[in-house]
Length: 198
Image (cartoon, rainbow, N blue to C red):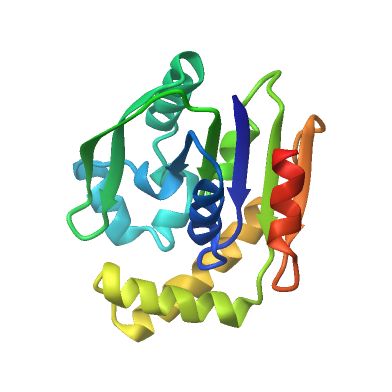
């Protein structure tokens, strides 16, 4: 099974890119780290009092993602699709059976951290480095529409998330056994995809 990790700050286009990849291949499935936040009372409280909570590792349920990841790797099938509801702070599980999976894409702001926990596995790593203002515009539009945030709140949250993302990766390198690609506004995506699937 081919593994592809897609990382980048909030609003950089990770989900859009993963959808584009899945649209070009057969037998691919995406695990979006945005759907693996912790739930429960403790998480609800922390999200109110910790600034940038959803961009910090404490909010992320590594155990649940690892469970789904290992099941797909071991069996080549997936039964459920998870979806995190940011307003209710719950995870919805819907039946979406996929079999004969050949490509597993892990995308989101925690993709890089999760990739660094893997041992003896080769994968391709795509890092999006997009203009900060462009990312902010996308996030404001998304957060007002999907997460019920006011524009000012969405702006403040984005700026905090941008700093958190780049600060936590200052001294972290990607494992050496990976194919690494940096994607900017000027990158020819189709060229990158042809390298991934050759």
